[in-house]
Image (cartoon, rainbow, N blue to C red; front, side):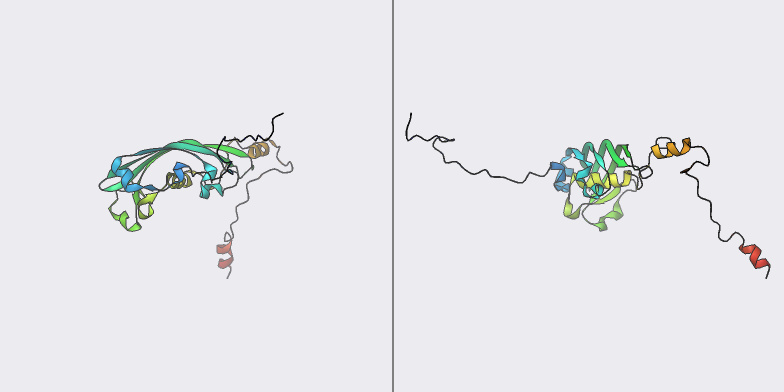
Length: 197
């Protein structure tokens, strides 16, 4: 039996405690220098889960992801970004409260402006997007486009909603039948009442 020998994990180096660091932010979430990218004609690829976009993540039941690219360039002295994206969003149908999938495909050109005062000289076909002090992240561009593309109230297409299909299959007069609400006309007899005076 050997006596007095101790094994060391790193031979002659002392054993150090593990050093934990916070995970690095994904590249699409970091602010980018708009002027430098547009002068160089840079192109940035991305793949973003929708739950990572704060203004979208607040919507109940959202999921899915988008991928695509942003190409930066200059047009008439203004920084312009062409955003192309594709993917699918998982949303919650507000009629039946079940999951639904919405395909996402979009290509848009936007002018990246350091301040709101610069909007006056833009061509009508280019939408302005504020890039405070000349910096913006790919996530901000994508989120802005998706807020315009996604419906305010998510609903299955006609004939695809389980709640609507079940209601249409019921016989008239059956309990739980969905009926169109009667149109209310509060002033319908007003002329008749006034003519009696």
